[in-house]
Length: 368
Image (tube, rainbow, N blue to C red):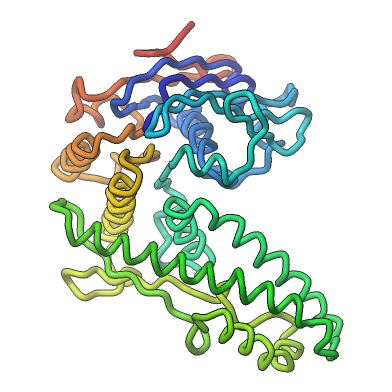
């Protein structure tokens, strides 16, 4: 699975970019602030969700024009060649097209799988549970394309239930249908998450890698997560009066946290060193990619922003070797070409510069 063509029009700092690529890793270098991350953000759109920055469509438009933007690409993978496009006009929500026809996020998830690791995720283990849930759900979505719809269904029903709670509504009649929907989608969300963790554990156990394994567990902030639809529905019903007092729903998969342990040392990930925490995240991304390759017959596209700068030469070379052995088209960014010296001819090199407020991309595969 790889992008063989990528075109950007008025996207972020890029007025126009046209790239023709092969399946090798793509090493992108240039000074800070020139638009390297903007380039891989465009690639991150080729998987369900809001992209690696979780930005609104209007924020992706090149300024000051704000004319709207367009990103198109050709994905080659197990299902053949597909042309995928994203368009936002005048700040409107982006529209997805697959092979010239409007398409859903779920359909996109069945064709393209993209995983990423960006500097904003470096504090994942020591910040709030919301970020870890988001990381887990991105991982889960890579295995189960319907996971996003389950999350939307759950969130929609929970918002309505929370509205009733804040209004101090006590009549159970108003809650039953919402709690039934939350129980259906919530139990499925939890089952998907558990299945994703099992796949990661197996992928780590079966791998020979330079990166440390991390043991993962789902934990609930208060008590155990009801695992079946029936149990979750009963838990929601029994929690109504407590939830009314709190003004929000206090039980369900939205209260789950992801707990990680550095397996070789038996030390919680949150208590590991900064370098170890980064290595644990890389280990999970690589495990996710290996598991997906086994599932769908091809590794996903990897986006690793500024990852080389945080690794010593030996660990950096090990990462590049694993990526190439996996056969993944990994998009890597860094400030200078020396960070990718260990890749040599195994990578396509792109240089990003800035001129008069416009990003410019040059190198193998770029068009003038």
